[in-house]
Amino acid sequence: MFESKNILITGAGRGIGRALAIAFAKEGAFVGCLARTHEEVFSTVKDIEISGGSAEALIADVSDFDSVSKSISSFGSSHRCIDILFLNAGISVDRERLENSNPANWKKVIDVNLIGAYYCSFAALPYLKKANHAKIITIGSGLGHSGEVGNSAYCVSKAGLWMLTKVLGEELKPHQISVNELIPGPVKTYQSSQRSNDPNDSLFDPNKEWIKEPDDVIPLAFFLASQPPQGPSSQTFSLTRRKI
Image (cartoon, rainbow, N blue to C red):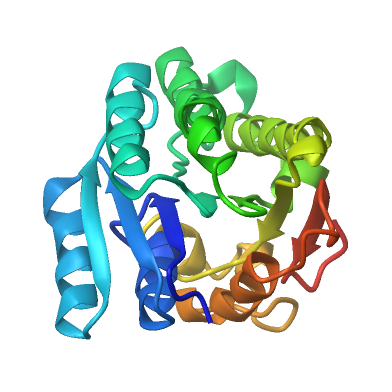
């Protein structure tokens, strides 16, 4: 389905990013796996290559512009273009009411989830423009649309990512580059492990929500990555059961 496509995925060392990388490689894409943790990203690449796919490890911290710029420029130059960019890297390290929050942690969440997405988009745009109808897919959150008490840093970062999706989609229409947000809803990942194990957390209540494995996100990712040039842009697509 994605033969000859060059796909770059941030946060590809684990969770949803890892699942995306493996799935797209199985469909014939060459996948750039970008993450800051050496062992995790090389594990993803190794699993792809064992299965007969093609991938490249890119070690970078998305909150460090120089690091990201060098990695993405190297990937783009080597492969001429980037067909699809997944802005997936994200963290959640400050689940406190704002008055009790840690300013350094609060800023770190914004730096990774929002500023990092900007850095990656900025660095990738010259190579996205060289592709034939490229796509950017942001991995958002329903909390970026509705908010949650005691989780301001994450909610604000994802709200910013949502608006970046909308604005960038409009800016890139003349270049026939679509930009859409994919909201996975609750997924069993390392980042969500504390929440998913809390019986009082309504977001991970199986009676109210579909609690997914990372692979459950793949069909919607494939759908968005395969839309025609005149397809949707600046839109949100959600796998959550709750209203966002």
